[in-house]
Image 1: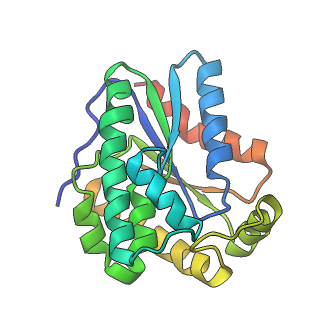
Image 2: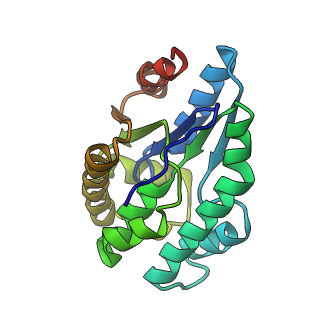
Length: 210
């Protein structure tokens, strides 16, 4: 199974990690740094605010019950809608797109229960990012951050589950690096925010020197 690479003028950057690892904070930081350097950049996320994404958000906040299979299918549907409606049109215009979560989250979170091969097959039409940043943060630290920022604990948010997902994530990323030549960087996300952003940008800026 071969995933298509991005052939458009814009760069596609994805930020991944377990819940509480700082994905949105660092996605915002990347976009800020790129714009400061004169690069057109657009920040987005998954699940999206689209039709499938809205259902997913209800389920993630435990206001709607879904089977694991339905979760996986909705994530894949939301992603294809996202790519075609938001991501690819901007890449075609030469804009850099920075996305908070992508196919790797789908495989890591749902693959434990349903098998990685099936989840991967659902997403085989998704383009590979030009760079994926994985923010590696201890699950205990992530749970402290989650408790500090929100009253409602979402689906998947407990230490044991996050520990299992982190292990699966690292395995998935190694697999994509080996089998699909996916450019991936693992960054220590437990450092202060500004330091993490600097570490990320050391991997991001070389994309714009070619």
